[in-house]
Length: 274
Ligand SMILES: NC(=O)c1ccc[n+]([C@@H]2O[C@H](COP(=O)([O-])OP(=O)(O)OC[C@H]3O[C@@H](n4cnc5c(N)ncnc54)[C@H](OP(=O)(O)O)[C@@H]3O)[C@@H](O)[C@H]2O)c1
Image (cartoon, rainbow, N blue to C red; front, side, top):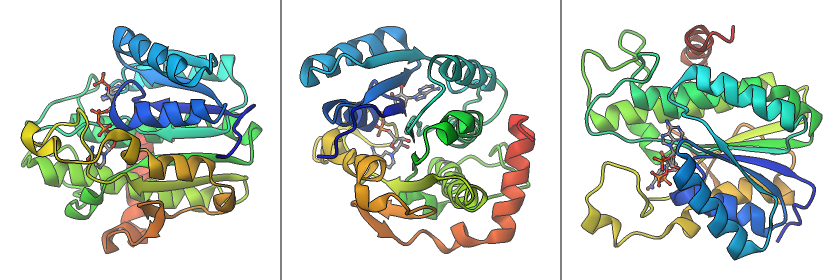
């Protein structure tokens, strides 16, 4: 196992499922782990479990609801003040929703949590990631990104909401932002990659309980995130999509540069980071 002592690692959505197993894996490797959780009670319970399981006391809890861009800004400001040097950011928090819901800012909730929040958090944490270079950003996307299409006429799925198409759009946006950022960050020593974690038994919506029970558990789902966060052989690998700890082919749409660049500009406008 890679020795992560002295490395500061942020994991969003760290109280449950794949994020919790990722936080635990990083803590087991000796990292200082900053768990970002929206619910303080659920976060504290997971934090205590991880400390007990790993013996690593350098596991901190940071509360933020990533469905609100002002909360993302507050979180980033507080993290930067407390940890001006960050080595790993795992954007893991995500939702899959059967019915259309809106974020605090009026965006479709999957688009807000799965794309806008990690985009903004990553950009705001850039100074700390640059200070920690060589550093890594790991974006948890999904194979379902291939069912998505960036619909600039209806980015918020207001006209038509179908769970897999809208979730797929948010995860395709995550893949596209990963590829763009890797190009834009070339001069910096910060890598950024994205992944499909597998189909895993977690609290994620969209799947009946009896199906979930048959699926692999979160520790398996965290393997690719941990690989991208820690593997020494990936130190210089950036701008790729992974599945099963191996580089994989993303959908052809993810490589459409015109759409990617238009989405980048639109995301900057929507998040107010431009
Ligand atoms: N499970 C799968 O088969 C699968 C497949 C492909 C991709 N993924 C992706 O893997 C990632 C992890 O999901 P999971 O399967 O582990 O599901 P999960 O158990 O539901 O975990 C999702 C995490 O995200 C957090 N989260 C959701 N909305 C949030 C918000 N507004 N602010 C802050 N945190 C928020 C959740 O917090 P709460 O506990 O408070 O809700 C939870 O900690 C997601 O990005 C998901 O899309 C999962």
